[in-house]
Image (cartoon, rainbow, N blue to C red; front, side):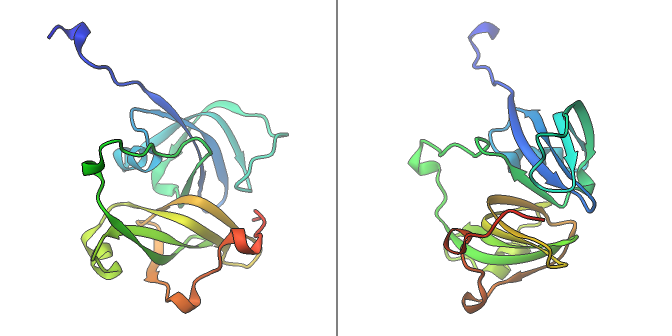
Length: 191
């Protein structure tokens, strides 16, 4: 096979918002990965080079704040990462490549936020076993409720990636104590 016959991998621009202790940063990162979690895992211990960047105090940047061409973000300072619409992962087409998983409700305290969401582990795994076995630097949660620890804001995100290294605690959420879905209670996006 000649080099010109080899399949090529296209770089993708994944849009995201990240939270640090003091601010939210929105932009996009160029990567070979299709999923933001994979891109962050591959960059762990490095900085993220973002393009078309807006910095603000809320997770939803104001249209009034002009974007800058680029910014270098310290990945060690990132508490949360939110993929922006259109940044979700494609479903694998090979049914044999799918690992059957079950959701477990997890709560994490990270910086000024408490995040509760579903973590998916292999069928039959307990949450405790899964957390012990998985020492990945980031935890991906779905159907997540994010609450500011000072009580000034609460909102829902379909996907949140939380820095496990920056988390104060990780704990299971008993079924009786689980936060209701934002779709059911109409939680507004605030900070």
